Length: 408
Ligand SMILES: Cc1ncc(COP(=O)(O)O)c(C=O)c1O
Image (cartoon, rainbow, N blue to C red; front, side, top):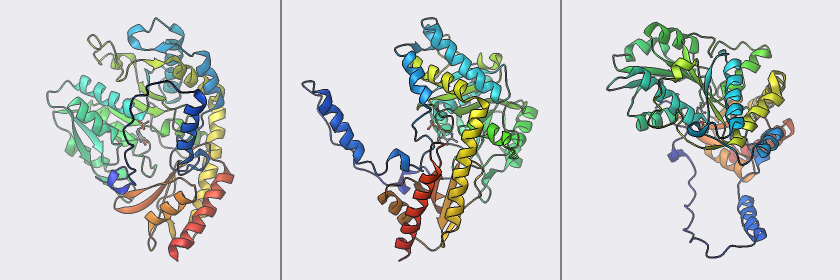
């Protein structure tokens, strides 16, 4: 596999917690909360020091207020008439995102995140293809949720190699992987390791020519690429504006300022979605009942932010990325691996222990991820829009200290 970042072997393992008997008697609220507080106090970094995960919140403040208004309500297909408000908020949130991404008539559903959306995409492709031994083409830089989808759905993944220097899938090799069992293709906008954009237009043209569904995993991209383009960045087409793109996943809980767990599975039009059989399951979705508050929060954040609000959020986040990239490049011994395209920034060191740098940051209360990508030890930062320039400067100060310590 080209990217092995998520593999457990490279990551710190923590001991599995001891078994706990079911409580015999209820305890006072203050005691219960005190226990949780003391556990949280042992976390290696506060949320404000988290440069490891894009979704380290808190979400936009309107999310909690909106969710509170809808508290107790639910949305789920098999009783969508029970809370029509939640149903409508969900479908309107989906529609707003489909429209942002080039399909004003697009449909779909809210999911729990990128994993569920990607599983939904493989399921839809499998149903459209209706092959006895279905195969799905995935660049080796694709998210591992596609492999889960393949396992669950009885689909075989065909690996499309990537150019490790650029992280771009070798789209010219697509014809070699297509056969009569192929049901679909996926690509990423952008891939998760370095945040680099796949050549989506090439994929889309190929998929259209061959009559295959193309899924674009825009877990990160949906909530940043349109706004980067608004800011004047040259962002190639990656969404439904390309006729070959049939489905898109994008996550509100990554760069969309929405609470965990908010994902979007978007389908170009209603006829395509109808391929998912729901007579027996009652559902087009993978999970079932969700809180109405999730739909209300998603709807509210989109309305409160608007295109102009997201543009400013993205401008701010990219400024923080720039501060970090410049700061890291100025530390002797460190090397930014690829110029950041979005809010993902990776660095390494040719002559220093990179794992020790990650550990040193952790000891100082700053979060980053560590693991090998394409065989290179990498510290990876995924910068939440909530991180401030002051926090970036704090991170850099800790990094300078750590590098001096590791170098010595
Ligand atoms: C490109 C990409 N796709 C899908 C996912 C899965 O998203 P989730 O963790 O919300 O299920 C991720 C997670 O980081 C990702 O980076």
